[in-house]
Image (cartoon, rainbow, N blue to C red; front, top):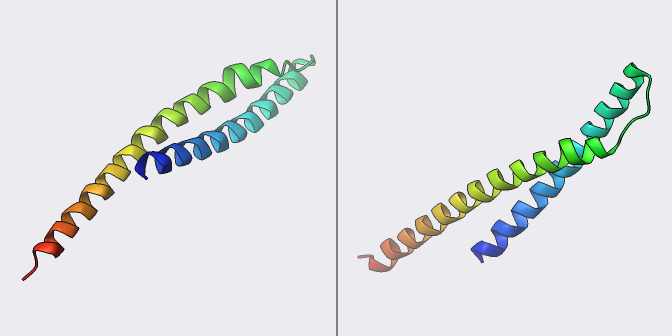
Length: 87
């Protein structure tokens, strides 16, 4: 159950980070093109902003969610062993 939760949380947060960074990247490219009075190159928003941000968020979320899930699993296992040893 742990790997499914970790993959699901990682995927959802990576997707959210990609969407937000793409929105901000597009806004930045459009503002930059208006200031330079040129045409916006939307490839920059995907290639140079959204993809690297999503990759970094994916790595951080994967490691942190694995850490949290393993810690919770060990804590539950320890509590179960304490409970079963009882009086």
